[in-house]
Length: 243
Ligand code: FES
Image (cartoon, rainbow, N blue to C red):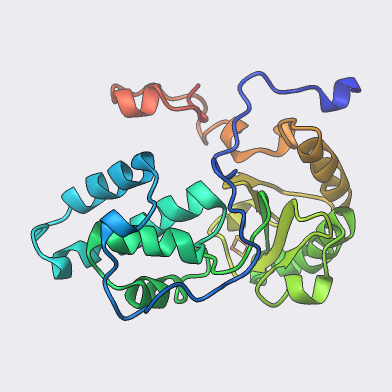
């Protein structure tokens, strides 16, 4: 491995699923309008505990109507575990929350960041909205598709999984990092401004398990005005610009 692609000591990629789904597509599971029995659903303990804890954070936690408040974080937990909101994962979450799978599907289908089809192990969202577009966002999306071997047309219409199944590459409408334009989110971390040549570098680094583009990572950038101390432990213990 060249120096350029050396493993970053503290590299961790929050977007990578912990228990990648075996399924490669959607198969109907039971009646989506029926609340599944938890005893009949093979839900991993860790996921069940996570969802129970999420439900506990919301008011009215003793009714299934109240449990619906935790739908988005519960679906996010499912996606974190399996890489996407699989039918099995939705069934498991529905059984824990005492809601119907149909309800959770309807929530998941509304949000771009919740995926109802296989989404690779690593996700690259390239912003193509106005600030990034004016600074070459479309070309950057082309470059990521080429480097990852993903279909450009699909990438611009909801996302394309690379030929080897490793990456999801998707155009996105403003990730809120306009000052980094043109920018991309790679495994839930922001990078920019990026040149087209950065796409091939990032894909190769990710394939090798390395920290992608450390010199372009938002988390490594100084805050405006320089380093600032904080008395908040949540800030001082987090990896970010203050570290
Ligand atoms: S326009 Fe690209 S992040 Fe806002």
